[in-house]
Amino acid sequence: MDVTSLAARAPRRVLFPLAGLLALGVALAIAACGQGEKKPDLGGISDTTAFRGASTLTDTTAQIAALVKFLDNYPESAFRPRAYRRLYDLESAASPERAGERLAKALRKERQVAARSGLHYLLFQHAAAHVPDQVEPALRAVLADRAELEYEVYNSIAWELAEKGEHLDQALALAERSLARAPDSLAKATVLDTKGWVHYKKQEYAKAIEVLTAAAATSPEPYEEIEVHLAQALDAGSMKTEARDAYMKLLLTQEIPGFRTRALALTEELGGSPDELARDLDRRREERATPVPDFALKDYAGRDVRLSDFRGQVVLLNFWHPT
Image (cartoon, rainbow, N blue to C red; front, side):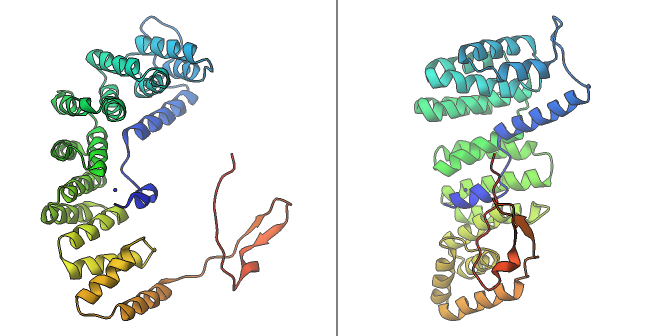
C-alpha cells in the first residue's frame, strides 16, 4: 500500500463497498431467475425492484425519500449496505453533518450484519473526511460492536489507517479482529498483508518481515503485493541480501519505480557490481520473454490491423473500453 501505484493495479483486498456491488449483481441475477426476492412485511414489490427503482430516480430529493422508504420497508434486504452508501453520498453532497447524523442514528437501530458493517465503514470514512476528531471514537465503536461484523470492514479500515500512518495501534487491533474472521487462506493472506504493513508503518521491521513472510506462505497463489511489501520490509530491516533478491524477483516480470535503483544500490553495498547485476537482469528477462501471438483488430475505418504489421517496431498496446 509507499507503493500506491502498485496498489492500484494489484489484486487488492476486497474493500467493503465492492462487496456491496457483488451483492447487487448476485441479487439481480437471482431476480432474473424469478427466485429469492424479498417482499416487505406489508406486502408489495420485491426488494430488487424497489432498490432499483429508488436508485435510478434522477431527482435527488425524490431519491433520498425513496431510499429512506426502502430502508424502512426491507429490513432483511441484501441491498441495505448499498442503500446506505447511496443515501450518504446524496446527503453529504449538500450537508456532510446531516449525512453523518443519519449514519449514527441508523447504526443504533440496524440489526443486519452486512448493513452494520457498512455503516461502521461509512462512519469511519465520514469522520476521516469531515470530523477528524471523531476518527478515534469511530474506531472504538467498530472494535466494541458485539455483532460479528464482516471481516472486510475491519481489514479495509486497518489498511486505510496503515496507508495514512495514523492510529496504528487501532489498525493492528482491527487487523487481528479481521484475521479471526477471515474465511479462507486467500482472505487470511490478505489480512496478514495488512497486519504486516501496519508493523512496517510502526517501524517494527522484524515483526513486519515475520508477518509478511507468513502472508506469502498462506496465500494459495502468488500475490504480488505481499511480495512488494516483504521486499520493502526486508530492506528497511537491513536484510540486504534478502531484500536485493526480493527486488530482483519482482523486477523479472515488471519495472517497478525505485526497485531497480535499490537493487543496484544494495548490490554495491554488498560488494558486488551494479552494472553486472543490471546486465544479468536484462538477460534473465530476455530468457523469460515469449512472443505475443499475432492478432488482428478493426481500426475506426473498419480495416484490419495486425500486430505483425509492426514487427521490428516498439508497440504500445492500450486496451480500453469506450462506453
